[in-house]
Each structure stands twice: as structure tokens, then as C-alpha cells.
Length: 97
Length: 474
Image (cartoon, rainbow over the protein chains, first blue to last red):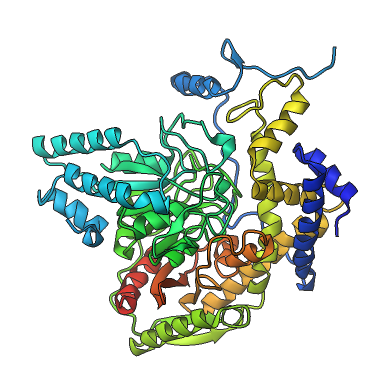
């Protein structure tokens, strides 16, 4: 079970605006799903290692240098920002004046 | 021209021998789409002019010199969560409704280099989240076998397009069964390779440790041709791997196939089970040894998935914030308000539900109880497969626990839709290759059976599926 207060708190963390009606419905649905998920408590996981990936994952690093030939790609990526200025993505105001 | 008999192989050979031109077959497919797709809704927008000019260009190459590229002239449909440079890529979401891909996904780059071209982008559940296609933010795709029924999801448009002869082959993505389930519902073949066998670069991320690009076609042979053109290590995807070429298999005689008890018990529709058992009998006649096996943790797959997937999804979808790209709510001054309003308005119901669930299981105080526990159960499921593959060559189950259902029948009940993944999700959790083959119909509704192989044995799986398909095809 998850309370309405908790549902509201999670919505704030998830940065999603919900109406009161939507939150109530979500509370009911999430409670139902979490109830089903509780099934996992039946499994004996003593001494079992967690598995985040089915393959061995290791970090692949490149040299820390400017890649000139990739500039056009980075330009088209910035172009997709709703607001931009001189090759920078523009962000809304963070602090109140 | 009868498109029904035009396989990938037949198209490539026919173009080479000049039996027909690329323009001719492309026109046939476009005509078929114009005729059928108003009702089925498999494709989003198709740029007919551009598609035809590409086909003409290919014909010109054929006439000027020998075109010996392996996929020369082949049209391919692509699920709309895979980037094709310069084309819209909505992921079935209002959030990316007007987004155009700035680059090609690796799979697209590879098929283009091999001579193929992109016919159009296909309908899907929003961000590939759904089992019926009904979570598309645009209107849902329908099952070509019976328009009152769902096509299965989330690669619904890709499966329906192949089934209705609107494309010879299509790309999909499979996080818990999203290629195999719609393949089963539409009566075609759907293949999800070993995790990493195909690069995910340019696939819009849902749950990264489970997502794989898959292939849908009418014949296993066709799938193998495409798989060989796109698989392999890619420097743009650090999880990509090389799978071995594998040995030739000419006979099913002596193969050992395991049937996990949990996948043939309660919760599985009786009609689905009956048709599956009949298919198994046909394997026995070919000398296949059938073994019932215990895989006690498979039944926890869905519960495990509904922790891991939302956790990864909520992290992946944090990027849609109205700032970087995609839709953005107008007229908002503060950053925090922009986040709330943009995500509240442009994400669909199911996406919000999954983000909420993921945020919850990862939130302070719950991480160990949910996420860490799920990762350990995932290990147990993998261990079940490891033990099984000591005794059997392949594992076989029905693909879907139920027959295709009617549009609207399950949409208000998220948990019953989640259960659609029961039989397909274990292969994603363990990273294993799996293929769904059509085995027959109940009335107008197709049924599929899934075969799962050990990791990296994709080529062996395809070889065996190719033999089995010949026995199962009526």
C-alpha cells in the first residue's frame, strides 16, 4: 500500500504535475502493482549476488580532447533545444529575483 | 505481383536477376499501404515521393553497374523509436511528436550501407511501453487478422505491417517481449537476439539493461539475412558484442528441448496450450527429445521486471524536461514549473504510471526492499536458465499466455496487461536470444510458440527455427 501523501511526494520527485483526481487513481493503481510485486518476498535470495546487466559491462573511455569532425552533429543536437542562444541551450530562470 | 510470396530473399534475388525493378515492388508496397493502412494504422507518415525516388536511384545503380550489396533494393519498415536521420521519430509520444532524428541509428546506418532503404516508421506503444499497441499517443494499430483485435505490443505497427504485406521486413525493439508478442498475435516470426548482439545506438532508451532491437518477418531465413547485416560490436554501444557464426544444423533429430513446468500450467489459456502441445508432437516425430524441466523462478519474472524496468525507465525518461529537446510547455517562467508542466502534459498515462513506480522503488528507504531484491531474483532466473541448459539445448514455451484480445478489453486494467509479458520477459532478464514462430490459429487469431537459446547461440537458434518452421507451417 502507498498513501496519498506518499504518492504526492513521489510525483514531486518525478517532476510530474497531476490533478488531485489523477493522484488518487495513481495511488490505487500503484498500490495494486506493489501488492503484486510483493510476490518477490517468496524467493529465497540469501547469498545471491544482484545482477544489473546480463553481460559484463565496463566503462569505455575516450581521450579527453576536442573532436573537430563531430562538431556538425553537436550543432544539430543543440538546434533541437526549444530555446538556444549562440550554440548554447538556454535554461529558464532558476532563482527568484 | 503477389507480395505475399515476396520474401526478403526473393526480393534481393529478383532484383539481382532483373525479374522486377525496385520501383515496381516499392509501388506495390505503397499501393498496399494506401489500400489497407487507413484501417490497420501500422505506419505513421510515409513520404511516398522520397521513398519512390530512393527506389528509382537504386534501379539506376542496378542498370549502371552490378549492384552486389547484400541487401540491395530491400525496403524495410522501422519502429518509430529507432532514429532515421532527417525523419520524424516520435516514439509514439506527444513528447517527441515533432522531433526529427539528427543522426542514423547504427542498425539504420548498416542496412543503408548494405543497400536497403527505409519504407516508413511504424506505430508503437508510447516509448515502447505496452503489450497491445493501445498506449500509442496516436491511434492504436489493429490486428490485420481481425481488425477488432489488438496487434500486440509494443512493436505493433512493425508486426502488422509485415503480416499485412505492407513491408517484407521490419525492425522492432524488445524489452520484455515487444517483438515476440506482436509477432505471435499477428502470425509472423519475431526474433530478439542475445543482449548486445545488435547495437542499441540510436534506439530511444526505455530500460537499457533489457532493451534489444529485434527483427520481424514472415520467415526465419529472412530474419537471418537482416541479422547478419546488422549484428556485431559497435563503438557507439559499449554493451554490444560479437556473437559466433555457429555450426550448420541440418536435422532436428536428437535435439533436446525443455518445457518449463511453470509455463504450461495455470494462467495459460487452454486453447493456447492445446495448439502448443500439437506443435510439440510434430517435433517429437522429427526425433526431438522433449523434457519437462523445473524452472521455479520464472513465475517471478513479471514482478521482477516491474521493478527493474520502471527504475531504469524513470532514470532514462528524466531527460524529457522541456529544455534539451522534444515538446516544451509554452509561457512558463521558472525552470521547476517547466519540468512539472511539460512532463504532466506530454507524457501519456502509462508512462507516468511507470515513472512514478520507478521513482518509488528507487526512493530513499525502499531501494533495498525493491530494487536490490529484484536484481537478486534476476540472478535466480538466470541461474534457472543456466541449470536448464546443462540438460537441454533449447527451452520452449507459448509466446503469449492468452490469445489476441479485443481493443479496449484490458486497457483499464494495467496489471492484466503486465501479465502479457509472463512468458517472454525471462529471456530479457537473462539476456538470452529468443524467437517466436507462428504455429496455427484459433479461428482468425494466430498463436505463436517461443524458443529460447543459451546466450550467444543466436545463429544456432535461427538455424533450428528455420527447420522447425518448415514442420509447423501448415
